[in-house]
Image (tube, rainbow, N blue to C red; front, side):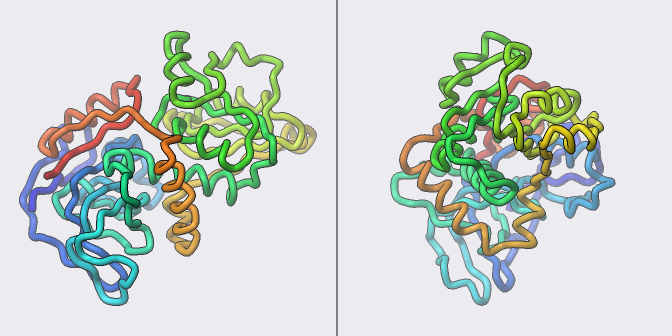
Amino acid sequence: MRSIRVTRYGGPEVLDLVDLPDPVPGPGQVAIDVTHAAVGLIDVLIRRGDLAAYDMPMEPPYTPGIEVAGTVRAVGADVTALAPGDRVATLSIASGGGYAEVMIAPAAATFRLPDGVDPVQAVAALPNATTAVLALTRAIALPEGARVLVLGATGALASVFPAIARRLGAAEVVGTVRSAGRIVEAERLGFDRGALFDSLDGEEFDVIVDPVGGALRGKAMSLLADMGRLIAVGGADSSGHSVDTNELWFGNRGVVGFAVGNFLVRTPALAAPAAAEALAALAGGSIKLDVSTYPLAEASDAHTRLEAGGVSGRLILTPR
C-alpha cells in the first residue's frame, strides 16, 4: 500500500510517500480501506516535534493521520459490531496511521456511518463533534441555558461547537474571529454571533471553549461569569500562559483541560454514546463544513497550507 512516512521531525518536506505492506488487524481492531484522511493541526505539531516531550505515541518513524473515513476491509478477533464492507469513520486514533491506503484502527473508536451521511463530512466533523460532546458533558456539565464563547470560531474543532452546544441546551453560542471579514463566516458556521475578541469587553459567559491557547487564554478568563468554566481543548498557540489560581479561587471560576485522545484511551466505553450524538447532528444537517481535498502524494502541500494559518474548514487527503 502507499503511505506517508515521517522518519525525522521537521517541516512538511519530511512527509515521504512510500510503499509498505498491507497491515493486518489484530484482536479488537479493524483494517480500513481509507478513502479520506483528515489533516489537522495536531498532525503538524507532532511532525515538527513540538510535542516530543509529552510522550506521544507517534515518534519517527511513523505514519501520520488520526482520523479517517472509508470501508472496513477486515476485522480482527472479537470484533462483532463491524463487518467487511461497512462504511465507517474513526474518532481520533492516538497511534496514527491514517495517511495511507489502509489503516488499522481500534474497533471501539470506529463507527458505521448512517445512510445519507457523506464520508467527507464524517471525517471532517465526526471526531471533533464527538470531542465537543465529551468536552461539554464530561470535562464539564454544560448548564441549561448557558452562554458559550468559542475562541477561534472558524477553526476545525471550534466550528462544530455551535451545533453540539445547542443540542445540549446552550442558549447562545458566540465565536471569536481574528478579523472583521470573518464574522460572516463564523455566523455561517452556526454561531449566533461572530465577534472580535476585544469587542466582548464587559460580557460574561458561563462556558468558554478554548482551542487557541497562548495569551488569548489568559485574556479570556476575564470573560467568565461567576462559577464559569474555561475548557482548554487545544493549543494552536503553544506559547503557553500562566493561570493565577488565586484569581480562580476568588472569582469562583475554573479551568479544565480536555485531550480527547488520552481520555478515550482510558475510558473507551464512553466513545460510542458521544459518537452517536455527533452522528445525529451530522445526519440532521446541523453540521456542514467547507472541505478542501488533496491527493495523498500532496500531503506536504496540505501541511504547508495548514501551517501558514488562515485555513477555513478542513483539509482532507484522498488516498484512493
